[in-house]
Image (cartoon, rainbow, N blue to C red):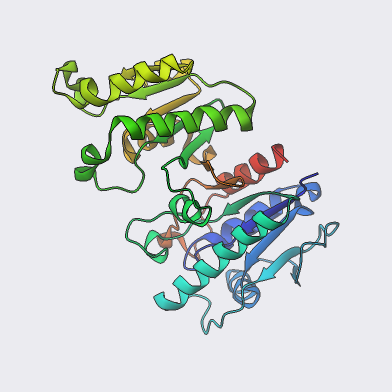
Length: 321
């Protein structure tokens, strides 16, 4: 039975210590026993104390401590931090890579791990410009065919952008029939595998009003031909839908709405679901989820951060264990 949940504490220059504290206080003992936090023990302890939060921490060397619920189990990432709130970018990059690499290696080796959750991480700490955790872990899993998928999920609806952290001016250059086919097939396969349901998938157009489906438009040349091929593969896919109206009411008819770029689907989705959404990566060798928000440096030390998305991530991984 998969009864272990790995949480990577993520970027220490963030609200992560606060949301970890708030989530720990709200989850039941049955979940606490399953959680192992990959973090720097001294750094987390110092941050919690300075913020006035009290959690009993336990430094461990392996994943055998299952029945402990009164202490947060820490798998220590051994680096030296002089100040718990002032950081050197070079040290942060090293810390983040060591943390994610350790989580990846443990998830590959230990079949009792239900999944990985990472707390928010700034994109510039992950190496290549614009690289996110989705792409970082896909490269670690040797996924090189674009079949990794960012799925943002809440309740009965999920959204997925075909391109993730890409400049808007470059989106049209990247979108092609092959990419659409790869991503939708991955969504269909992994959704059935994880959620035990064949999804109804809506695909959005790229341009305003779908370029009125002119012959030379992206919709006519790339998106519609891909949809026709997907239908022949017995995938329940529909579209292209116009992006500015689908979230009024039509979204209720689908399990997944696929957009061409990040904000096309994430902006309306977050307006609907606020902090209840989570980020799930499909197509890896293990389950990975994360809170669907950033590091929120402007909220550090203000006790205003919401832990809802982290709690929902924990519940999600646990529900599939």
